Length: 151
Image 1 (tube, rainbow, N blue to C red):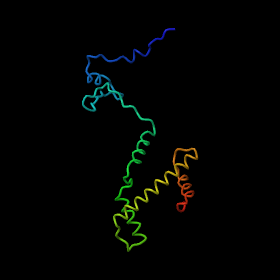
Image 2 (cartoon, rainbow, N blue to C red):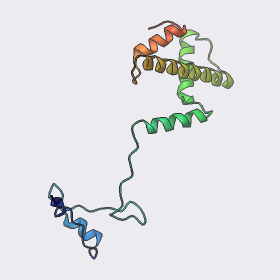
Image 3 (cartoon, helix red, strand yellow):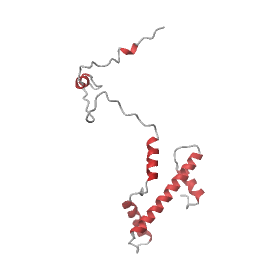
Image 4 (spheres, one colour):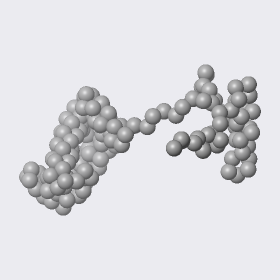
C-alpha cells in the first residue's frame, strides 16, 4: 500500500519571489485583520525559528548553581536593616544606633540559618516523596534540628 501525502496540499511553502511583507499581509488573522510581522533585530528573517524551550527546572538549577558560587548576600540590605531596627526599637527602645559591621554579621547569620533551614526542609520533603516544600516540612526540620519553637 503506497503512502499518500494528504497533508501536502495544506502545507505548501510560499514562492521565493514574494517578499516577507507580502506573505504576512496576505495571511488573515482570526479577527479578520491583517497581521504585520515586526523584525526582532538586524538580520532577522521571518523564517527564523523559535528558540528551544528549556525543560522545567533547568532555570532553577542554573540559578542555584549561580547563587552557590557567589558570596554576596541574598537579602537586600536596606529592608533587612529597617527590620532589625524596628525589632530592636520594639524590644529595647533606648538602643537606636547599630554598627554597620554588626548589621552585616547579623544578616550573614540570618541568611546562613535560612539556607540551612531550607536545606533540611527540602530533605524532609524528599523523604516524604514530594518535590514541593510545605509548611509541615519546615516545622519538622525545626523540631528535628532543635532550632526554636514550632509555631
